[in-house]
Length: 211
Image (tube, rainbow, N blue to C red; front, side):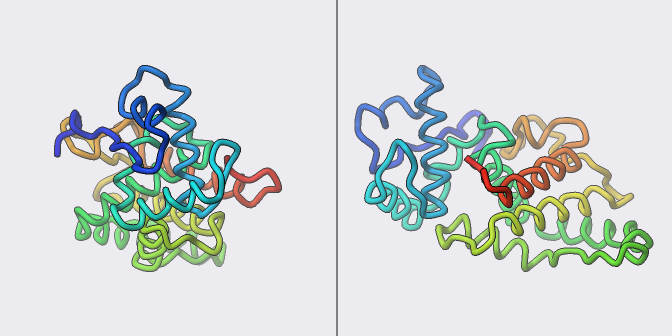
């Protein structure tokens, strides 16, 4: 799959008039609404636009057909939104699934680079496999017991992946890569994404939450 083909598929449960407009850019407001609704559906939550029954239907589509059915809807969502946070988790999980050896190498290299800092602060690194399993469960529609904690773990993990001297803070450097995106190709992408996920974790833990 090339980047040009990376387009959202229509969620099957949407009203036909709404679903017809989702793949294109004709109405950004509808795309934003669909992104928000599908993000909440992944967490089993209804919103102002869709009833609990409709969200259950969309969640079923995600569980049976895969999160790719809706994930591309999240691509243009702001980093401070639920959809934007899920997009960043999705990209991280796709990268891990495609290049696990690269991720492991970066993780262990970054862990060594941060060893002195960790010893001084008493902080612990999130487990790589555990964090990826939790992200995978979320993307499979199984939910999460603590979204804020998962975002914090993912944000910390991204910082570790950026810390290794072997690779540095860059993420995707080839514009033709299937994961090339405004999130992954920017300068210092891993650090910036880490900061965004950590900010998302704080917001998710706040009374307002992520929307």
